[in-house]
Length: 87
Image (cartoon, rainbow, N blue to C red; front, top):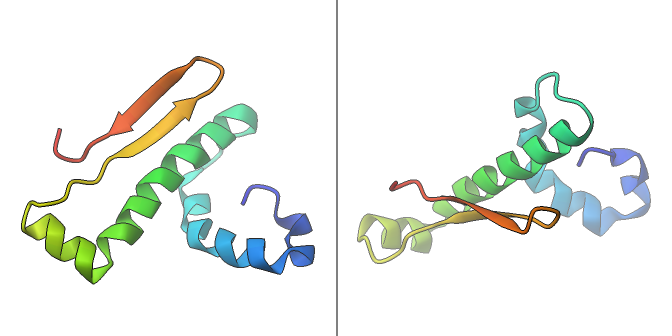
């Protein structure tokens, strides 16, 4: 997503990355590691939105039989950040 130059040689990956393109709009002027970290976090939130769009997921969320959680694992720190929209 952040380095799209090589994607033309990888059409399957390019199609997969399309699902995250909206993340680029949320990165602002962030650069380097900050840009990567922000892209990762924003992608988790975006993919949760995509999941909410599926009829079965939406129905289960409305019935309160399903809860979505987004997790970002920081390998260097050994830390998991959790996004739970109900908290």
